Each structure stands twice: as structure tokens, then as C-alpha cells.
Image (tube, rainbow, N blue to C red; front, side, top):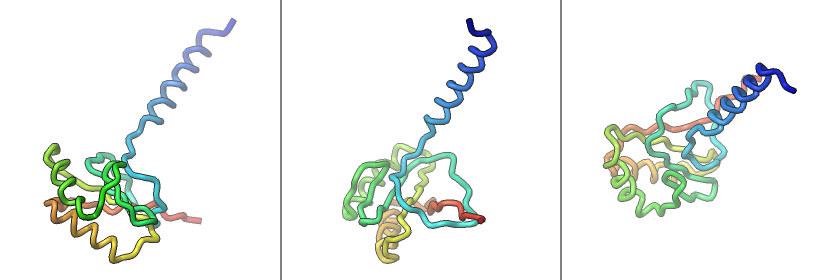
Length: 122
């Protein structure tokens, strides 16, 4: 028979683990550039991801560059203070990044946060 404290501790560990695994991350997996001044964003409103093949996703939904402005306008109407987190693979061209940034601004969204991985201090 297990002592009651062991059962309670096990339940507590399981509860904490499940809460941490439910963290919201709306970006697609990409290889982000590194930065020493990275602070993780807590409130994610809209997520725009550009992967290494130059495919664009809005909250994990694939989008063409031509339709990006319209889709962002629709999604931004649902939010009070629309913000955009931009996850761009470090290997995409600078020109393609600016095309996407222009489309985001054309949608009326000026709160854009470029995301990066923390720089390895070793």
C-alpha cells in the first residue's frame, strides 16, 4: 500500500506537467535566428510564420502572399489590440521577409514582433 503523501505528490507532478504541456504556441517550427536580447512573448494574438521554403502560415494555416493582407485584416477585427508575432526562418531571403512585412503593415497591423531564439552563451 502506498502512503497518502506519495499519491498526492504524484498527482501534483502530473498536474504540473500537463499544465506546462498545454502552453500556447501558434507558430510553425522554424529555425529562428539567435539574439542576446530575446524576451519570450506571453500574449500571442496573431502568428505569422515563414519557413525555409518561403511558405507563409497564419496561426498554422497556410496562406499565399497575395491573400496575406486580407486574412490578417479579418483576423485582426476579432482582437482589441492586434499584435503580430513574426517567426521567420533564418535562411529566408531578406527581400521575402520585407514583402511579408509590407503585407502585414498593409493590413493595418503596426505592432510586429520579430521572434528569435536565445543566443547560446557557451
